[in-house]
Image 1: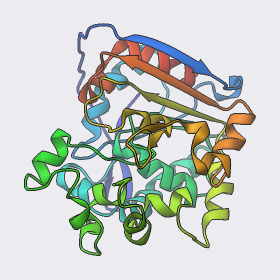
Image 2: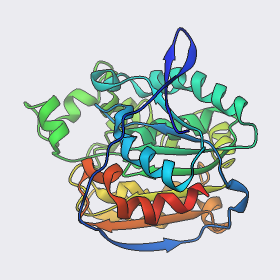
Image 3: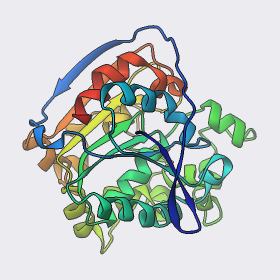
Image 4: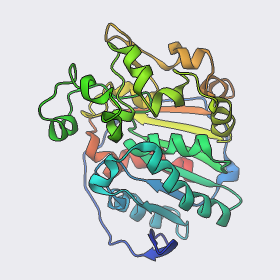
Length: 308
């Protein structure tokens, strides 16, 4: 049985999820794979972390698909920081969620899969950096893994008085860093301010000196496979290549993963994963940000194969 799990009184309780289906147009896809065989991952439990302003309901459709494809597989949706609560600082969310995630891993010593959507992918990066975890496959579904810099609907909704070119004035302050979005806002035109104020993604990427970076890398490399999913029609993750660890330079040109300094220096393990054939990237066309977890083609092509 696949269930949603809520935290009540410090314990994980079962909470049945109502069925939900969606008929969506097929997405065109291309795949680049360097991942190794993962036969040992059959029927591993799945932990889901939702996105910004979201909730566990974001993965009802995937849960229903899993009921058909992998009946009996345990599914744990971490029911914390829903809605506006998801705007709290990311390290606060990481440390709080780590309690439940650690309990789940202890319950399943043979390993788990981590499926993380949007901002949830960054929370999962944090979890994978601080925990001596047993994650087999880390699936990042349209996540701003390398940062965010764009006038998206979320930015306009939450900060209507700011454009992307100006919001550094808020985000790169101690007060501004109280917003989760500010924790991974990476303005390529204000690099020094980013390094001085970014409390989450800058230390995770090794863009600033941190005593924890060696530990972050050792823990992150405990994963067997890294699966990166994104596409050019997302409309929210900006640049969309951030979902593959690509990002802007100071000229707003895209620097792909292998040309990023944190890859070349292997600061937190991406180069090691790549050289050991443990990174797989998927590019889907025609999928908007809010529909990734509903799209059957995305599920069949880029998620389902990693859960067996």
